[in-house]
Amino acid sequence: MKHFRMPATVLLSAAMLVAGAQSASARPVHDASLRALADRADVRIGAAVDMTALVDETDYRRTTASEFNSVTAENVMKWESVEPERGTYDWSKADELVAFARAHGQAVRGHTLLWHNQLPAWLTAGVADGSIDAKELRGILHKHVTAEVSHFKGRIYQWDVVNEVFNDDGSLRDSLWLQKLGPSYIADTFRWAHAADPKAKLFLNDYNVEGVNAKSTAYYELARDLRKQGVPVQGFGIQGHLSIQYGFPGDVSDNVARFAKLGMQTAFTEVDVRMALPVDSEKLAKQATYFRGLLDACLGSRSCKSFTVWGFTDKHSWVPGVFTGEGAATLLDEEYAQKPAYTAVAEGLREGR
Ligand code: XIL
Image 1 (tube, helix red, strand yellow):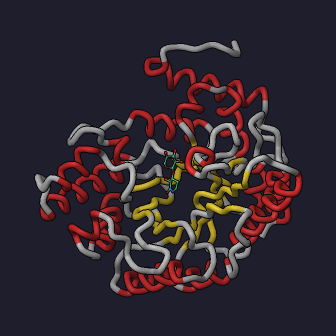
Image 2 (image 1 turned 45 degrees about the vertical axis):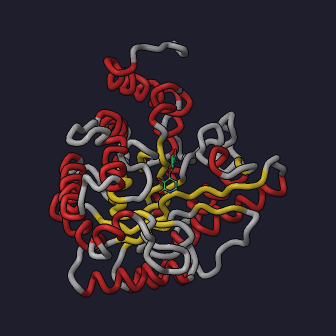
Image 3 (image 1 turned 180 degrees about the vertical axis):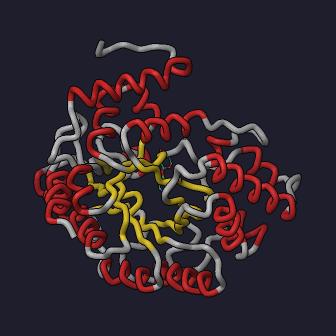
């Protein structure tokens, strides 16, 4: 049974439900799982899910189900995935994730509606060659946001509406969105998302915004100004991609607190802590303190509703492919064995808020 494989598309949902039932009997959500501890701490513990691994690997499915009570699509809700050809939508993989989450009592974070990466080629090419002008681009963005948020209406508790729109110095990123539409694209995107699903909490999301710095302050001022204007912005997402070769960011709790004071939710949305390879026990111990530092900042503020890791096993992590010479950034090693970081997160959740 362990190595059964079937033509994925046809039998996928059935296979996943079977896998879910197996995992429920083989490894029930035990009292010490991260999700059981998180339930008691009144926070969502989430993971970004790689859909290929979810389909192919029993251990991956089982761990996703047993350790987490929230999931994020690592890639399959991004624009290039859901509208690969103009006007032709493909929700299949994202729907599979939502079905898996439903079968396992998990909430779903939506990621992401507007970004400068992983855009469909038809869109970037059309903008580059001038066949899509600014007016048409705005209509395309409106249609995309409306279609995607409507498709998942009622099934997403937090949406990353705009992703990575600032530079580290606090200036707006010079993306095609800014170039063609000007800064008002941000408010527009939030308004359109809210119109399509008024109950979903709508988030800004970025990296290098853990502590108080020029970039997080730009977000603070943007959120404050948008909310003053009545734009539906309800959350601030802190990605949390850290590396132990840099110091732990200062003032994370103060940063979270200032957004809470605006009346916003906060979330840690993509936490991983990478290290220069090879791994040694000292690096793993340091990594554990970084995970724990971010988790404590979350648990220290009632505004912080979810803490999501960007991958949970070193077997499936984006880090080695992107950061040369670095890796081992997640809670479990390549064999799914618990690392000190896992224990640190479990202890933090056990201590609670
Ligand atoms: C990454 C995925 O993990 C990779 O699989 C993909 O190739 C590129 O994108 N910030 C984000 C995420 O908001 O969407 C990115 O995810 C990681 C950085």
